[in-house]
Length: 100
Image (cartoon, rainbow, N blue to C red; front, side):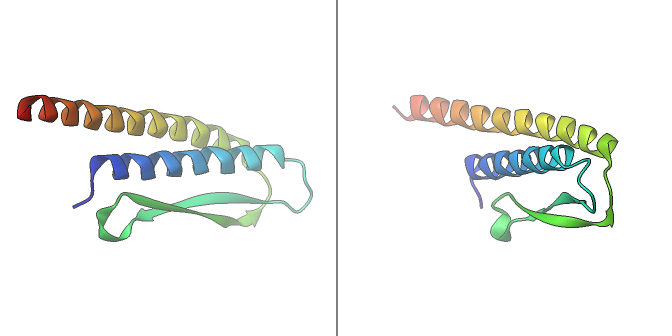
């Protein structure tokens, strides 16, 4: 069983990759022949959170509306994973206080 902190950390890394990839897409909006990049997320082996990898989108061109929504979604995911880590720390602190 994976720890909440490892799950939260993998989620943070995936959200950061999504933000970075979206920013890359926006920065290259007007580059001729540019193909957007998308982040593929899959369950990590052993349920240790999530794995994220960058893939090329199949179609040439930009999709600013998709990238704006992706940035917002990744920001919310980032905040949610930070909350998971904070909650885990609080639970561990309470457990240690109980044991002491």
